[in-house]
Length: 104
Image (cartoon, rainbow, N blue to C red; front, top):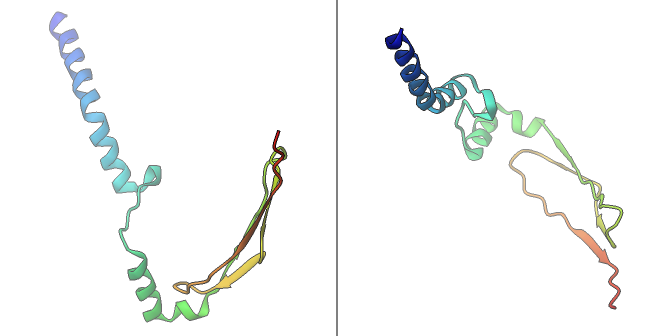
């Protein structure tokens, strides 16, 4: 009985040490836990889409939200509420920041 209990204890300690590498391997294989399965840079993805012709067809709408907490004494406003861009296209967007400070 002592041999079995000792084997169980050593088995549990061994599994404890192996848990992190086993979990990492599982996540890489399945994509679980936010692990990326396919490694592709943004430039490679844009090039792949430009070869297939999907870059010029698709348009992305980026909407800006300028909410602030109620207790803050400042106002954040985007000059544009939304911008329409195509993948790989650069766009410059401006925002306005207004503050009210009271010196005491």
